[in-house]
Picture (cartoon, rainbow, N blue to C red):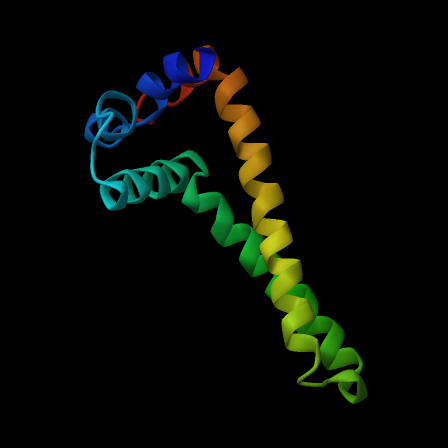
Length: 111
C-alpha cells in the first residue's frame, strides 16, 4: 500500500505503472517491460554510473600494481562482483526514495 502511494510520486511514467496495477489480463510482455522500466527509473541510473566507474578504477589500479595477477579467469568473478555492487546500489537508492519522499519533493521537485 505504501509503495503504491510513493510510486505515484516517484515514477514520471504513469503509463508504466497503470499497465502493471490496472491491467489484470494484460500482455505478459508489456507487464514485464513496464516492470523493468519502473525498476530502472527507481534505481536512479545516474548513481549506477558512479558505482561502475569506482569499481572499474579500483580493479584497474589493482591490476596495474600487480600485473602478474592478470588472468582471464578473473573476468567472471569481476562481473559477479559488479552485479553485487549494482544490486546494493539499487537497494540503497530504493530505501532512500521510499523514506525521503517529503524531503525530495522540496529539494528535487523534478524527480
